[in-house]
Length: 402
Image 1 (tube, helix red, strand yellow):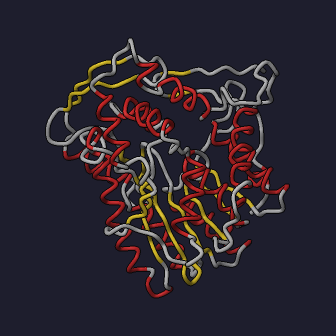
Image 2 (cartoon, rainbow, N blue to C red):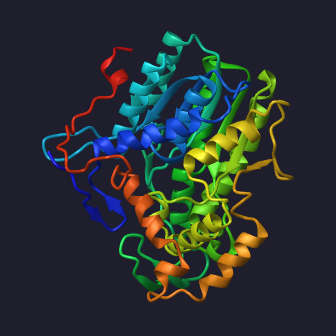
Image 3 (cartoon, helix red, strand yellow):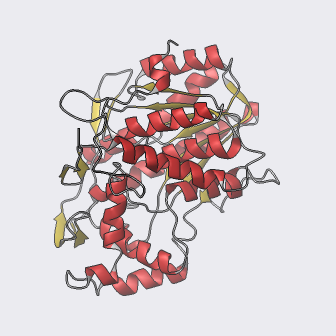
């Protein structure tokens, strides 16, 4: 079958198998060309491992530190009517490459918020590793969560808090600029967003692993966050998603105390703004990303997920001096290049000048749109899109008994 992108709003409903495979190969090649992370982790659990920063984290662990990895995610296999999701193809490509390199890699596909998937993961760790997980990465991104104990379902939202928010935004695909006015979230919407995107589930994962004594002495656990500039703070750091990220940081402090008896540490890595399906959905943020991409590329500071994650591992988390590099608040600021004063001043200067007539020159909208397509395996260099594809690509470990 021939596969073309089918985009509705900020969602692409198709994924290209060969493009997704090539995308993963390119990330593996990048890591393989960097110095090895000799002091890196050896047994890594990644919760939310199939796309974006979670996938890049898994690639860096496996091909940068030769770590064994178990990835947990919720992705869709192909059927008679549609392709598999991009994350499915990413994982199939990653596992195949890892196995060819002699690196252990297995995956679990299901609702990571559920007790059932936590227990399935614990059973696999016991069977294959016997414990001793030395890094747990929490990189879960989901719009909904059902609480495993109460059965109550929550739905997150992307809204300001307190007052309506007015600003200009950009459609990532069409490049159309428009003015938006977003009504503030209700208290319930704020609470629901925290329930989905905050730290409770991260805590549940670590508590479950601690109870089974599956964490190694000196274990690290890390969750990902974003802060961003003043330009986007009403929609991000001061909006509903920002409240969830603050809860994540607070959870990290609690986990730091919980892990002290085994000399473990819990940290938050604040990452750079990148093009993802989630970021494309947040009003105002796509326009900001298109500007910051342009400025950072001009200054030769631009990084995608894989470059960020390699630098995070090599220069922040697993340094040769074995010191984790954090700021005064205890955060790993891998967004440091994005938040440089000269970068932010340049972005702010361009913000008021943007219109649809100069969008392609003032911003990197074209590059951002290209990156959005690449998320789903389209517009990837080295892929012949005229060739027919086999959509039902299997993930090797999902066909193996636990």
